[in-house]
Amino acid sequence: MFLSSTNIKILPLDIEKYLNSITLAYWICDDGQQVKKGRITLCTDNYSLSEVEILIKALSNRYNLECSIHKKKGKSEKIYNRIYIKKKSLDSIKSLIIPYVHKSFLYKLHA
Image 1 (cartoon, rainbow, N blue to C red):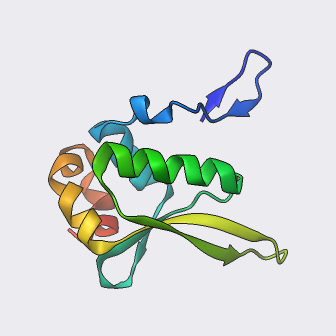
Image 2 (cartoon, helix red, strand yellow):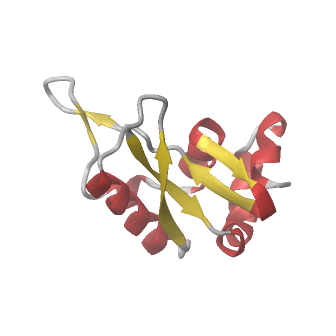
């Protein structure tokens, strides 16, 4: 997330150019959630649906990741949109990001 000149959080439309192996590794360590059978969810609860779609497009373009949106119901019954990364896609990028993942977070990558 980036801040506007008025300190409001924004997601730049060109977010793809800011993604690299380090930022993706940190994102997974911070907001990634291990899912059964080698998958991972990125908890994007505070993003709008359109922002999640922008992020999915960026991940697909930059890393050829196959992602989908999963709905998650919060405690207040609010529905959140999360990015779900399929196992095959996650396996294809592990070698790029593992060097930047602290060993205490390797479980999120099923590594």
